[in-house]
Every structure is written in structure tokens, then in C-alpha cells.
Length: 159
Image 1: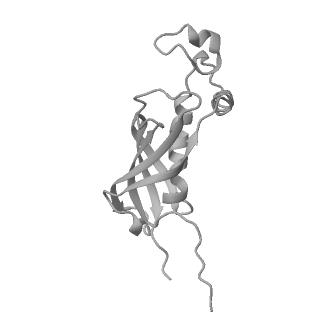
Image 2: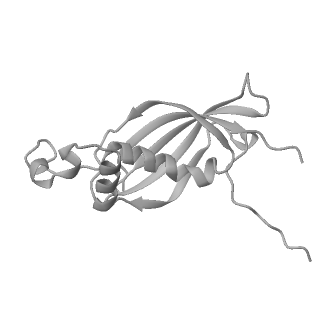
Image 3: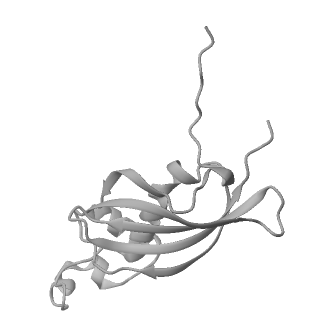
């Protein structure tokens, strides 16, 4: 008996279906260490992310908040193994990025992606442009981040 082998990968261009929502699991609980490390690695000196005493004095949150760029990076990262692992050529750009609710230490974030559009590339044979709408929700179901992303994805290889 020949064993069947399945290699984890993202989707080929042909496998993306406009209107499909992919739920990315498991979720990821954001820690204080995540926030401080990301913020300092990116040389962001914003006290809102690093200084508890100063943040307690700042309305309207009176607490440190998670760096929104970390939130965006986590959201995109959660989609990789399900959608683009080994099949993406490039990120072409982001648009319509919003952070409607803050993320705090201890929040668990769950990502999902809606395939908005796809078309074969006009300039790169064997590749196509896929537009993805990423949404992140916290453990209470509140939307904390949204972003639209255009990607260049490989078409399935001829077998």
C-alpha cells in the first residue's frame, strides 16, 4: 500500500474563491512581553506602549495598549499557513487599514480573511493578484483590526 503524503501549503491562485471567508485558528493571546519586544525592536518610543505610569494618566484608556503595528502583523501572520504559505510571490500593498478598538495585554485575537477579488496578472504569466480583507476580533468578538491586502500568488504548477 502506498501511503498518501500531504504537504502543508497555501492556496494556488486557482484555489482562491471570491466570497469565501477563511477562519484562522488557533487564536493568539497577546502578552506584555510581545508588546514591549515588538515596540522596542521597531524603535517606537511611544509611552502608550511602554510606560505604565504615564499611560495611566492618559485618557481615554488609562492603560498601556498593544502596538497597532503588532496587531496588524499578527493578523496577517495568522493567515499565512492557511492561505499563502509557499504560494505567495509578494505583498503588493495594503489599504483600508483600521483599528476600531484597542488591544490590551491578555486579549486573545482571532483572524479571518475574506477573498474579495482575484484576477490573472497582466504582466506576470503564471501568477495572479488576489485581494484579501483581513479582520481581527478579540475574545469578546469585537473587531480590533481590519486591512485590505493585495497579494501576488503563484498559479498551480503544471504536473
